[in-house]
Length: 207
Image (cartoon, rainbow, N blue to C red; front, top):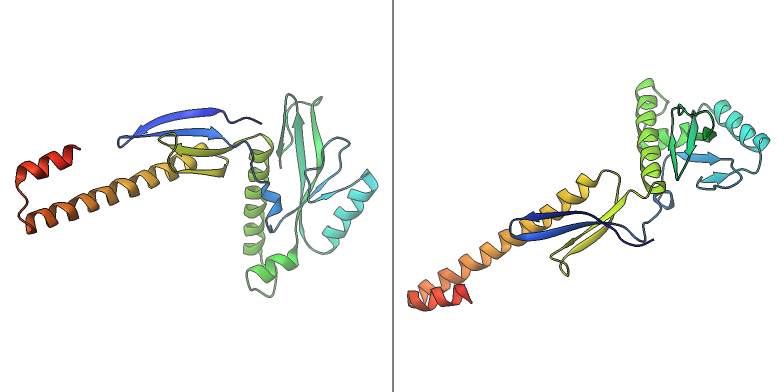
């Protein structure tokens, strides 16, 4: 996968290039709360990949018996794939590919409660939606990075909405500009204190 320039932005006298990440990290490699169960002949992007319908159905039934949150996962496969917790409208290139599980015990442990309250269940669903969206963006290649002034600061691995990558790059430039101004002001103060003539101060500023 080659880097592709997605957007170029001029900001505070600096140039920002937003590019696709040519070596994106898989978000499922981190410690996550959800468990993705996938059963497919060609794709194995799940945390647990099953060989057949019976295997994945047994895992789903066990999760339900444990009182876990379980939601069907759907995939649309046409010139690339995308996943969702809701069915796709196309009946030919889409269908259920597995399910997503939020273990009750993990939620109780993570949030320090004794029971799986309705409020905690709602939170579990929000976490599930976030992790599905994150994996979907990764699968679709929606992972970005920025480069400032071609060979300046850069950072990679921004998954999903490109605006977060842009905001981060602008934040770095804001920091650079602020510190440049601070250094310049400190230099002026030293010149004034040392009674450096104005003509020399101006020539140094233009250098």
